[in-house]
Image (cartoon, rainbow, N blue to C red):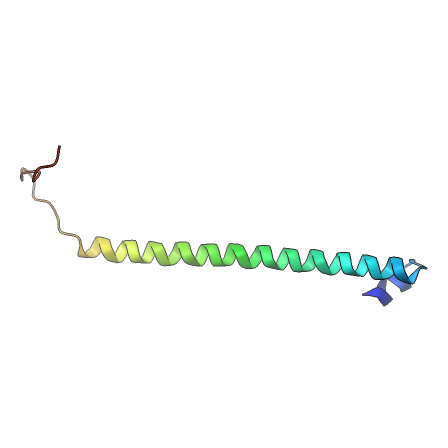
Length: 71
């Protein structure tokens, strides 16, 4: 990337290297953010699947049944 910046108008090698490091840092940050959102949605999906499975195994309450000590 340093050579890219050198060929696009940055005449100082140190400045081009600094810009390249900043650009790489921005790319890494963007990818980390995307992966973080991806992982969060995966966890939400797994929790939703577990909740759906738990709902299938839950017993239905008969109408008019006693609350069993609930207030």
